[in-house]
Length: 302
View 1 (spheres, rainbow, N blue to C red):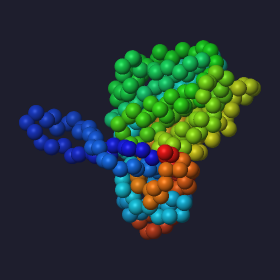
View 2: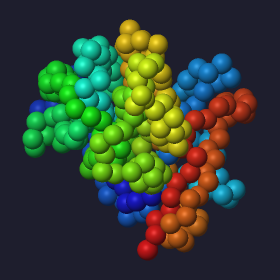
View 3: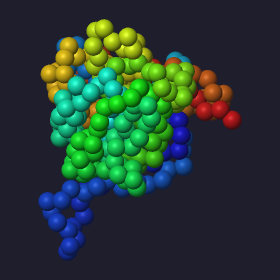
View 4: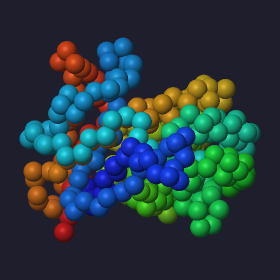
């Protein structure tokens, strides 16, 4: 819950200098309200993504109290997306396949997404050049991916904390992180409890990919599953690196298919407590659909 910028997508306005084949980019208008934002994935009973639903098909309850939807964006609007890639020493043999699969993700994503890359081993670092916080350029992103080299230990919690903080600097309301790691951490300064609290305050959806050897003593898939679940995301544990391309493509499609829904809570208390939120959706025949989103959020505190 925070002051946010509402993204308005405007149709192209004809002018003399306009190029008709160039898509309009979203621009931002400041709105002086506190919005609680939820990224929502809707599935049918067979687990297939459901698109094209209008606002009236959704309902939000906060601690059992109905809330008025104040912001509704359908699926496939641009998003702010961070790729958090483990490049610790244990990842060495897997890095080529990781880079190739991440490149596939970029090609399948919305071309207007603003993307950043975070590399982490002993320390956390930005993958893009200095002074470039985000980019929509495929060539810049692919170049950044190919600079990854494996060495050192794993500062996973530091990377997630850094990624969540950097997302706040993005201009788009739909936000997501894609974390690829073995789930182990042996080098962070930030603890898991702190990362969980940050995730509960963030509207970002976290997708996690656990890639590790069966005998790896540092593997921790429980952490990956926990981060994904509390943010409304998914966890993928591939049997081998050959599955990575399909997984990254699936995640890209999942982000593009999300609805972004916002409301101003009827509970004005700034008590820092966790509030349970249930988002429900029905199809056009009023049949209930499956909804995947975060289970709630931490209210702000004075």
